Length: 382
Figure 1 (cartoon, rainbow, N blue to C red):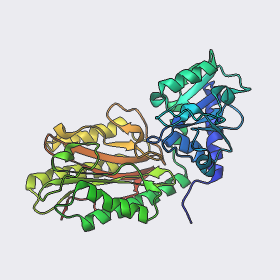
Figure 2: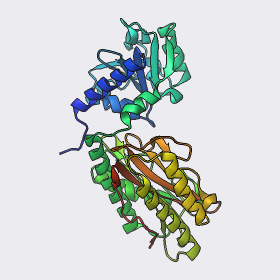
Figure 3: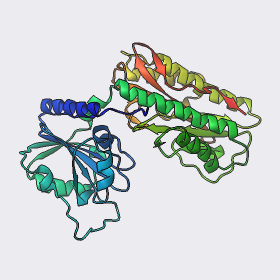
Figure 4: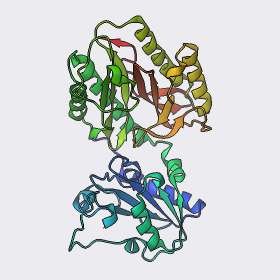
């Protein structure tokens, strides 16, 4: 039986956000997504745009509408848990075709029959300016406000069905990493290493990779985010491998450094500090803890070991529909952890010459966190 989010839960999400909209005096809300950042649209509709962009329009009362580009009609209707679907030219692919003769809705059709004085926009910081101009022209004098925080409010605590999706994602992600450990060899390219994980992830039930997977080796390992190249991996260097599977829209991540052949003692010590710091973060992340306090303690440990200069961020961030979601566990954060929040412990350390990440997904509990992955959370020398 496929692991998925039931239709009833999608309807509950609409009801929850409408309740919050009433509290915030919002007459309507638009939740925007693109192909790279599909979280908001998929959360409310289960639709995931390809090539085009998309949005979900939610009035303060009544039924929502899925807004899509002109080419996605049959695709969107085959997936959407929202019955009403409208195609708008504004959500077309970036090549900007005109689609002559095609019956395409307008923003006036979206807002028809509604009195909107205050509209919330989630995805505010990535909403294209040209679409914003067309939308606000149709709205007239209505005020548009950043609504990311109110959507985050209902997304941040995960339901049992969401956690089940994340557990399955973590299980498959570990299988992807296991395929790398069992088959990686000196002379393989970074791209070839990623192909091992990709085949295992898709072959074991994921709908897609959770994000563009990477392997970055040697001098490339200093990259906190990366894409694989045709560089051939060598013995005695860090091979940083980052693996994630997507299940029913939910993504986890498993990251580890690997060294092939002889591993110098200083390199082994560096990686062990990262592994120990991840385990410390997991120990500290319990319901009721303050995010900033956790970050300071973990960064203090790394600094005490002599590696404070290698800290970039972290040590954790939220996860769910996206591999990286709000909130970040960082020294300035006042967020208080609550049960059934989900996080990636994301322990990246790097200097000018080499870097690595230890990463795993956890579920916050009133007590020790539930660890969704821990395969080979150790210094791996093959």
